[in-house]
Image (tube, rainbow, N blue to C red; front, side, top):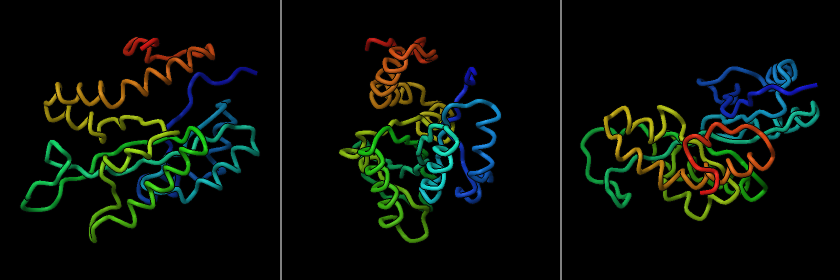
Length: 198
């Protein structure tokens, strides 16, 4: 039986509270009905449903992809420092991280815990982008669309800065993923944007 041509990599489950509503059992049934071989749950800032999700998917023969949509603290300084600001801090950017292996899962657990334990009182749990240094092995980063740094920069008219962020922060990850996908004879739409042999 053929598989679907689409795998959803950004599902927000009921554990995302205000941004998702689907329950794990319903998600698994939908994946079975649409013949999806895998699915990712990337709840907002937490991994509360990861075990339930992984178990339900595995029992149904679906590859679970554990992930999280992290809030990334926005900084004004070029070096990542916060400059003096009057008024509330800007909304954090979003970054979706997908677990690739056990090392990535351990890193994601640490990042999510850090967001809850080290955020200032009154602000949403978030981490500085620098927290990913040394904690990115085994994780795959997605730009997070309009809520991520790239989308925000484009919307604000900073195309050159957005381009630099993509080239220096995401280019290598995307090229690596495309090469792995191409080696498995699956279609990868990134090949039009990033050369596979980069």
